[in-house]
Image (cartoon, rainbow, N blue to C red):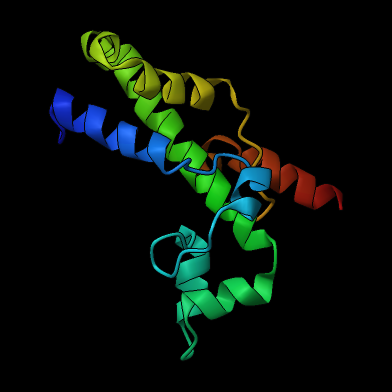
Length: 137
């Protein structure tokens, strides 16, 4: 509820024009941004300590940063689409075609994050399952 309908339309329109990378393949072709704009939540926190920077941490990780960038972008768009679809369907219906298309693409694109990417709900939902799998190793 921080954005008005026109602000949502402008924000999504800019993301569409910028061709926000939603998959690792798209992110690999996109220009590299500098920290903290695209540094993953956990990667930035780990890389920034001990005198290092998020950019250095990502460069050390290689293509892993590309996958994190795409997962973070797609996750944010999926959350926005879910909220608009369930909580503000009237706003979703009034969005211009490009903005709706971006949300449809985000909804249909499967989120396949890297192994070390921390999803918002995973620590809570799959905590017990994770402990069981670790015990099997």
